[in-house]
Length: 417
Image 1 (cartoon, helix red, strand yellow):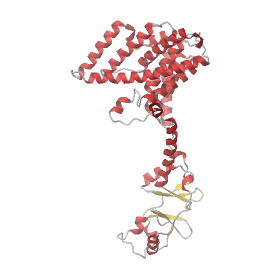
Image 2 (cartoon, one colour):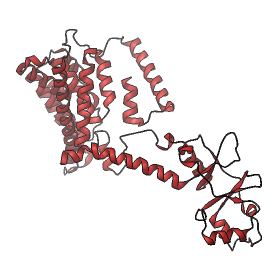
Image 3 (spheres, one colour):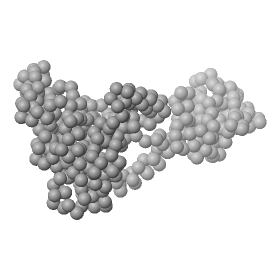
Image 4 (cartoon, helix red, strand yellow):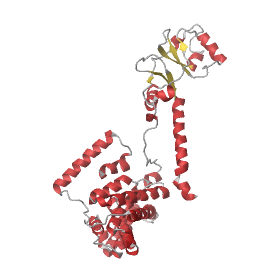
């Protein structure tokens, strides 16, 4: 599940069957292969004696997540700062990875635990076998080593290093709080779990994936509520303090527009009947062009429209003519020409029960600016009309609603005030 959520939140930015189903099947197949080769044990097993959090402990984990989320924003900024330093070095870029490798080697010589993927480190602080000053030093040195390696242009991952940095910070803070205020009931091992997930949530903005990933890799159900609260707090402060995540900041700096939020298409939620059912100004098929032009010049009711459905003697739709068709005096039509003779194509209609998204797509495909509205029971009986102005008006309501919501939830404005 974490793999599916990670793909949705960081790669796909959509929740559609065409994308979710293949990703879910791939994740299930990969997990089945892992079980066949490695077994079904959790990646990071935790002791069974972890403390069930009470109200005070849960609040403490949420505060811990907030602190780690703020640090995650700083980690992202420092990582790109290191990358900027490399760009200003007076040497050719091909030497950058070598310089980064030397730095990683020096740090690894001082603290060998910083080398490698780091899964053993994560396992140690989740089990409580690595704690205290050693845990904090490991976190700091791991960040130094990892940031220099990535800043030098060397390919590398982010998941395990962020887990190590966040877990070490969370475990250290949890141990300090547990020693200072033991009545809160904080467990340093759960604090480490919250810290590693909150660090990834704050840096990557993959909120749900962070919660589920930490839960699935440990299979520790006691950690669910602390994870949910801590990652939510980290996610909140990440959005409050930074515009982009660690995954998107670089491509945003290159001028690529990055969308980090996705929502249901607004026009898909509105039916044509909600905006398009109204009295329609139409023309008779047997009307002369002279008669219609006199009516347009008089500016009588409905004459200001840019398009008009044309109906036959029985009231059935024949086609649509535009104001330009009616007023074009150089197109070869004289005053005795009948309106029906100006119709250039079969009418393109939309059903009243279709959505405005379908109407908009139909306008684009058909290169028209208005669609007569009909019903499925009477496909030639016009009951309304939808225009491009109706689509813009619908978006106006969306923008007004969003503006009111943002005025009450504008986090950056609240922070600035």
